[in-house]
Image 1 (cartoon, rainbow, N blue to C red):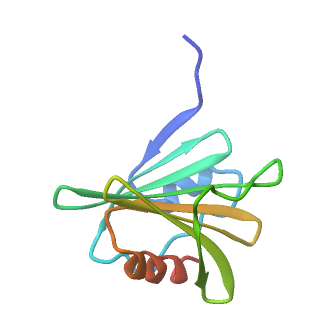
Image 2 (image 1 turned 60 degrees about the horizontal axis):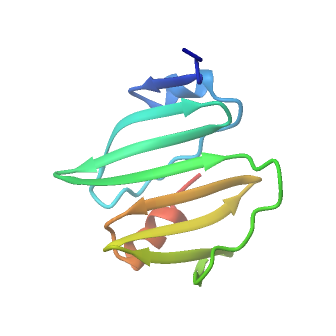
Length: 121
């Protein structure tokens, strides 16, 4: 079986050693707690939980130009423009910070998701 290079860690600090870019993390998490950090090839996913709800923050350094998300609403994250999409009761917020594409997924409302995004550094 092929090793896809998927590694799971319990902290961002541990995961950073396996990642090939600086992992960004939010200082505001809307009450969600970090459960694990997954590093796979050129991407990192931070897994947060609050009760039964999950919030995922995926990050990667794009090799190519990232296309706009169809039907996305343009939103401001501080002075960065992002895209927000809602589907099946969950939201997805995508933006680029310092060359890293960050996508936040979860059942948070748009305003909470933007607050989480604004705290990512």
